[in-house]
Every structure is written in C-alpha cells, then in structure tokens.
Length: 320
Ligand code: ATP
Image 1 (tube, rainbow, N blue to C red):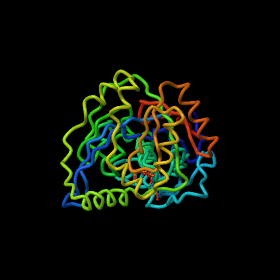
Image 2: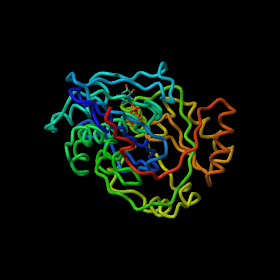
Image 3: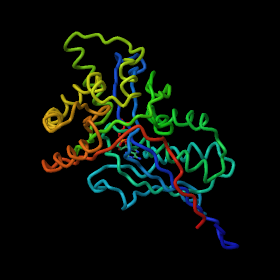
Image 4: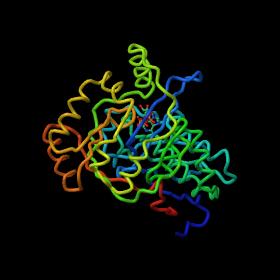
C-alpha cells in the first residue's frame, strides 16, 4: 500500500452496488409537478454493478465502461459525460469534499440498461461511496443518502440495499426486516423502455378508461409478511406493478415472456419497475436455475438471482 515518493499517489476504490426489483409498485395520479407518488417494496437482488474510482493527477471527471461488463456495450446507449449518473454522483461528492482530486470512473455494467432495475442508480450509489472513501470525505450513511436522493429516486435504495418500502417519489425509504431469501429469474430484453414514456402511457390508459387513481399511502402488509418468511407461495399472490400494463402496451412481447415463464415453472411473474426486464418468482434456488436454463433455450437472456442482498459495499481499496 506504499506509493512511490514524488509520484502522484493514485488510489483505486472499487465498490459494488445491487440492482433492484419492485416486488410491488402502486402508482398515483399525475401530480401538478409532473411526478407521480408511488408506494413500493424494493428488493435488492444479486446482480451487481461495479464502479472503480481512481484518483487522477489532472482535475475533472472521466468515465469509461469496463470490458468485463456482461452486457453487450455496443448495443446500449450510455452517456460518458455529465449525462451519466455516476459522473453526476462524483461531481456532487467533489462539491462537498475538501480533498477532492480528479477521478476516473470505470463502470462494470451487468444490470440491463433502461431495464427498470435501477442500473444507473446503482452506478451512482457506488460512485458516492467510492468517492467518499477516495477523498476521505467522511460523510455518514445519512449524508450519503441525502445526496443520493438528489441524484434520483432509486439511488438511495441502492445504497441501502436489503428490502425497503419506498413512498413519495420512491426515495422516502423505510428498511423492512426481511432476511429470508426469495429466488427469481430475471429476463432481460434486448431493448429498453424510457421510464417517462411508461408513466405517460399509464396516464393515457387510465384517462381512456376514466380511471382516477388514488394517491398511494402504503403497501400491502401481506407483501412484507411473505418476504419476511421467504414464503414464495404467499408472495406470488400479492405481487403487483401498476406500470406493468403500460410497459406491455409499449412492448406487447412482455406478455409472452411472462406466459412462457409461468408455463415453465415460475410461480408468478411481473415486469420490474418500468420494465422491460421481467422478474419471475421461483420456489427455490434449484427451480430458479432450471427455469433460467429453460428460458435460455428459447433464446432469452435469463439469469437466476436471489434477494435481499446488502446495498453498496467497498470491495477493494488499493494504492497504485
Ligand atoms: P430507472 O428505472 O431509474 O429509469 P433503469 O434501470 O430503467 O432506471 P438505467 O439503466 O438506469 O435505467 O438507465 C436509463 C437511461 O439513463 C439510459 O438509457 C441511459 O441513457 C441513461 N444513463 C445515465 N447514466 C447511466 C448509467 N450509469 N448506466 C446506464 N444508463 C445510464
């Protein structure tokens, strides 16, 4: 861990942060400020983004994507400038850190892009934690969570991890005690859905049907009970996502993916968040692996995961 004398002491802090699925998501009507209130149960799952933050002698923030990424980087559109959520997280940290340096962020992408699993949010959460360590900023978890909320509604949850109820824009989080694992198969699509489009579609569908949605005030306690006990059967009966029909309206093939999963052993399935990733619930780890294998035979990008898992964590800290 000793830097050579006279050389800039470059250091790399590597952090991993989980993607999430929304086990339940209730969406209120369009508000005057253009947002929607939600009530959601978030579950952090074992599919992780990684951010390696390296201090640089020259000032400024640079971003690259790691060749270790499990996604096809040529097929996705990820900005590498201030449009990247990780870049913005580093900029916010630099503002509040006395000893900020230049920083290079190398992101290993594994969470489907624009997939409704909060991949960009995980990158932002990982970057906050990495820069805090890199620059010895000494922020508390609460202070980091506050900055996370400024970056986006899903960023605080990726810092926190585990299971949590999210109210407001999804950023008012209350951790829920649920240590038992549930097992899922994630089916990624080879296209993305822009979250604002999905919300707009939901508003249109509701308007067409003359439905006035209620403001969500809380979540069905049955969901938390089922998660606490790791009771997949009970959970299968209470999964809900108000955005699902909007996602299916935009991408009708999602209905086939859900049907295929259920006819190959999933006990339930739902679109994750704004989609198009589909999360299929399985009885146990073996059933999840078997289901993922079956779906891959049909050409789907399917991966068995479990949750809850912890939030953003430092995995290494190296002086170069
Ligand atoms: P959300 O539900 O929060 O919109 P998502 O999981 O559906 O998240 P992301 O993968 O986070 O979607 O990205 C949505 C869009 O944000 C992408 O299409 C991309 O243009 C932009 N983006 C900005 N930063 C990132 C990042 N670090 N990784 C991926 N996309 C990013």
